[in-house]
Length: 288
Image 1 (cartoon, one colour):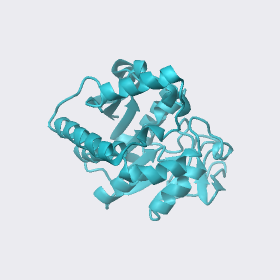
Image 2 (cartoon, helix red, strand yellow):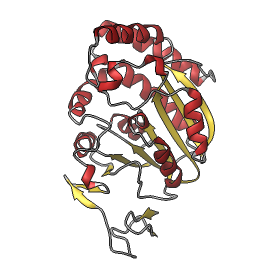
Image 3 (cartoon, rainbow, N blue to C red):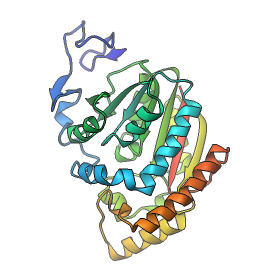
């Protein structure tokens, strides 16, 4: 079901405009836009990074490993989902994995930046994409599953985003989140990536449960690389070096392969039920 952002009326998803007030989405770069004023300058991320991410994601140990973990988590906890929305879909790399793993699911991708949607639509021409602000989602009781992967750390009002996700999910729907973890890892990379925070487990769990969710799984990952991350961040801070959003991923191919193998072990442990206590990132699965 859709929620009119002008008058808050609820109406059928198939309808283009609100029957109560006649309001409907604008069109920005060919995409339905529910926050057109933010489509080119939404904040929280540098739109110039999308091109670099699109070139690096498919070969990066980080994106490959995260996708393997996410595809497993969606299958295990998604309750045979039929509909899925990814918030902050970026260039569509995660959504392309979902489309391949779950070809019968109805998928939507959303992004505040129209520039990101252009890359995503080129990658997945049959998927529906829309421009929106995650703090004001135009759906209610609509999706079986919603994912936000390394998104809410960019948004000051993360509590508002979580509440909006809760509203957009069907009863018993599942939310999947990944976020960067441990405030002591903060570095110039976080500054230049437009992060607002790095979460602690307690901080994230509190925010998720306050929004009305019940947590069913929470684990760190990128645990085996934590010493390397800490050293790298410390050196960056000492040199006051600034990185672009994907600069940390520009590593030698042999090292990329080593890191990929290390994270494959972690994914295997998590799939077997291990909840890793520390790590550069955290995965949380929660139900409405």
